[in-house]
Length: 319
Ligand code: NAD
Image (cartoon, rainbow, N blue to C red; front, side, top):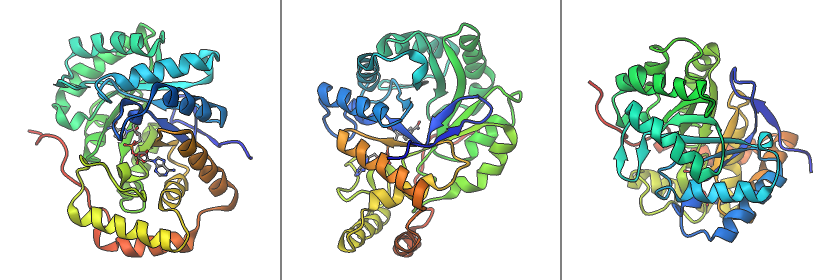
């Protein structure tokens, strides 16, 4: 099998595998995952060329970080062979983007991950905090963590796309290295596309997460907590059923759609089994070699047309 493609991440100098490993499922967010399965899944991902692993203290109330830490240690490979991103500011107990909390947070994360540093530390879902606090207090605190060597690069994450330019317009160039957007570059919603020229111009690396729209674009459907409207959920299930009838797999087509835009450094997929890793890496290699299945994708786009770019509210009203 051809190797998984590596893509540059903005101005960081890092090269990320086109498929990144989303570790939220290791926090039992999409169902129970045993420690043995978590370790085997991460090992398979690394073996097949995935070098980027994303987690957060929020996922499974710290469980995802602990599982990922154990699994990375079990790999027994030099630290510079994998890239780890975690987050700060969002916890099981709620949001806290204060300098004091995020400074404490990285030490807690490093302990759970059993690492000396993380490659990327991201402020998690900033639309739930004050964006002005992110600019004036949180990011300056993260810069100190960078100076201390605990963090190599700084990022921000969230759902509404407007949060990224709000922050990036207000911090000195080169301060925020990376953004992580989710559920905005998939077959049902591709609105991230409009922001890409702005991000490229600023040299900010682009990570796009949730190509399967957090389970909407899977045959088994989304988890109970999924925030999409009834209409959006129903349309995605219709699309999944249509694909199945045609002998196609909606998850594979969705991932391939997301991977086709090379301005996006990595597509983060949540994976909880060796089988999912195998399928997703195979889908990535196939699309890099043969291109995407245009016909099947346009048929799905047609089914999803009435809900195209429909999203859901996230965060607090900013003053
Ligand atoms: P996703 O769209 O990647 O979907 C994950 C779901 O799809 C899980 O149920 C998984 O088991 C299933 N799946 C994966 N591969 C499959 C396959 N081949 N066939 C069928 N089902 C498959 O959503 P996600 O996990 O929420 O997002 C990916 C990652 O991105 C997260 O784990 C997290 O690391 C990151 N993320 C970050 C933020 C944020 O920072 N705000 C938000 C969302 C996601």
